Length: 401
Image (cartoon, rainbow, N blue to C red):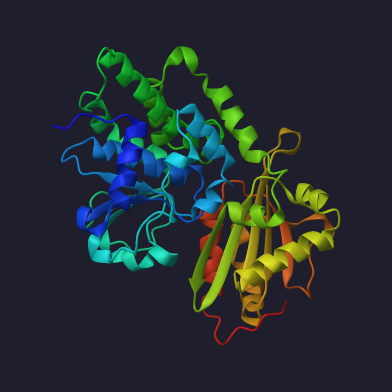
């Protein structure tokens, strides 16, 4: 049984294995990857699951990969903050900028926080060997892969911890230098790993207080992680508040960076949908833009660059301590307009109310903004509704911008 590597050493070993010359590269490489929005849940889930599986029989090296280019990692300021608390930095994390040109047969993939590969990774879908996710099942990943855990949960990380706690408890002895207390060093590495695991669970469930999102496995995972952190140094709510403060500070970001920071795309019936999630409301965004038209112009430029048929922005905020969701849907092309107009009739469960007497509505009815009274529905629930609205819209799209 190989010794357990420290977290930083493991990430260095993963980098070496991924970037080795072809003649020295192990085949197939096993990669663990989250979804293309690369939020805290996806980023941390890939690292934590890869580390646990690498240190569990049969001890195959699992390489955690962030599903974004390295240039976009800097936008994930909350990830940087969490990494620092775990004794790591963004330089330790692997991104889409690092892998060589790999053929599908040279790889195998484990998906976390999504259940179907998209974009430039879609060609590897047939090589998926495992999946742990809390989104709607796309029915793309084979039912024969094991594990294949796809179920509602506040955080994907909670499902990972629930599945992996026995493996964590059975880690081999830590590789340590001479004169180092092995037991103390192992406890320190557990603390770092638990920090990475705790962060997305707390962020995604609002410190386990968002009742409509929290599931039993979220609570169970948090209880387990409390046994792994160094209790005298860890205060759960303060940790949550510190990371939240970093996440919600988008004051230094351009609108371009705001739109791409937490962004996902889908194609349905030949039409492209893009949804940007933003951690401040439209009042904040309009204040940043100075004029409503400036914000709309920035969003139009973003939609044009991404060649979207439908552009959407979902916001979360806590004005006066009240959690709120707002939603913008904009039909960009002629067929996108058809889809956007179909959406409200399919989304009655979202309890949509016109936002501020239509302040941001416009473009001849192509763009509408609502306050979403159904607080339980995040992008995981709204995206399938918008995708359904795209279906059945036939013909060639022409941009209205």
